[in-house]
Image (tube, rainbow, N blue to C red; front, side, top):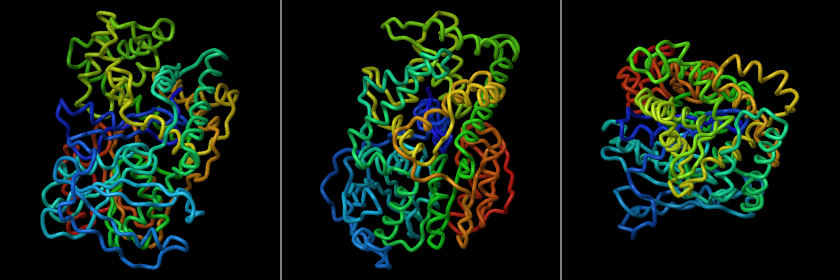
Length: 538
């Protein structure tokens, strides 16, 4: 069952991808329509460079810490020197930093954080930290991508730094299920109909949580958003920065907002693109995403029908019925590929979702339906599902993002709900919100109710009193982070400023609106705060 407590599905924020990039970017957007019923997982895997073993130090200058008064017991971490060295390829710089696993026990076990820096090309103003979302996305990969996607004015002014969050990527990883067991997990029915299927889904999420705890020890209970925010403050000081500049997309907005709430006096220029409102409960997040993804699917269907020769039908009602019927048929009898792999309802669910992050990827969804409906060939759908989970043809998962998302979301979003309450109270609302996605997202709220590790960081409204202006970007037909969330997040923040992109797709910056891009670039470079309520066309 799709798990997840806060959202998990969305494409890479800053850029308008070409066709050969779109799906790699979308996988960032989509990891796990799941943990507690959310679909927001931004795992921007735009691997423009390989981040592997680091090369020899070529006279890269170490950082000079700020020397500020650190929180009690954390002096050694705030004052550590970051030694940069060349990465395996490209012009970026790589480094590691050390932080405590448990900030309440700073003298105890530590972990490593992996940093990547794309150095400023001109007169440097400071550092801007970036994060693509997820939770579970590699910020190192995202920094490389934004090093080509930000305009020259931003690249000249800032070192662009991506820090793989604790548990993710090149940082000390969270280890949970092995590939075979996780492959079986994602094949579970996301919309169970029998007591046996419900129990199987619930057992699956418990088994994952138990595996995280068994294979990762204390780290499994210490990957919350608050701890990741604290890590970033340690790194801000260690890098010698008084101000914390930030560009966060999707879940990266929740991380940025949490930082601002914890350390408002250090907030510099902060952009939150595709807002995730921490005031919402996990169930509200999931329900909002059901509405958002249905809205995106409806937009795709309208486009498909208008273009003619749509494999789903000649009108929108017929096309929606075809999609719903296709998913129901897979529940009864999966399609089997030439290699013997089954396309289950669950895998088709993820295959559809990954294409809804950007209009550029709609053509892939059409191709998938053409093959499946016309030739009983599930191959394209299976490839799309693999992109969603970063799975290769050998059944190997190239990242742990599909499991990290559960661990983080369930620490951040406790859910107190029973099977009877889901069936009687919530499923009807979810199915009304989305005939296609509602069932899976409705059952998804059980994930964090069953997660065996106690929540430590329940989300609450943020105000960030005293912080400098924080710019929130919302897109009116964003499937993964519905526009209403950006509106409410900007309203909650004492210094929130809302910029609206009218259009489709996930996130707003770099998605084709010069109005949005110009406003954000001027804010980052010159400190020019956009007019609150600025509305930009697509």
